[in-house]
Length: 189
Image 1: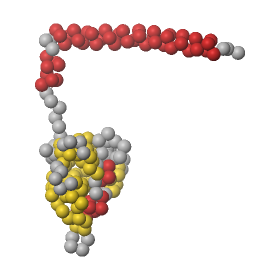
Image 2: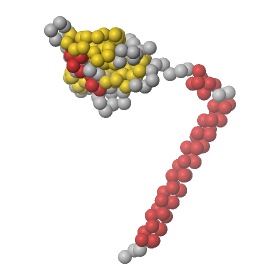
Image 3: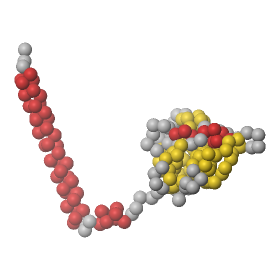
Image 4: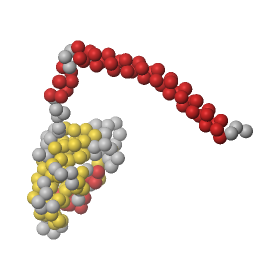
């Protein structure tokens, strides 16, 4: 039977052997990186200057953006709404409602469920707001965007609703194809 010290020694030897093999591959990668740096320096660093001068384009209202199987287009945002629905049925805002008209298209190859609860809104200071699903039901005349199965190639247009404080202002939306996706940001200001 082997002793603990012998097992530890074999483990350390295996790790060292694997590390040496990885280092050999790493030298080639380092050589390539150094060659790329030399080429960049030879060109006067124009590539890095170009990257620094071109800021990343941020999507805004009207711009199509994609997350997972969905393409989203924020068509308009209307804040300052105190009530949604009709005279008989509706909901009153705790603060103010922000109504976001959103077009959602399934760009995948399988049906995908859209849910308003996966969408988020943020103020400029990073305060996060969730949707008010019951208000979303009242804000949509024909279809509910609360939970809608969308087949490939099809799309829906509807209103999702955020209930935010009266003195707050939305800065951006984070749109998701599901609760577990990475999301995509759309600036509202």
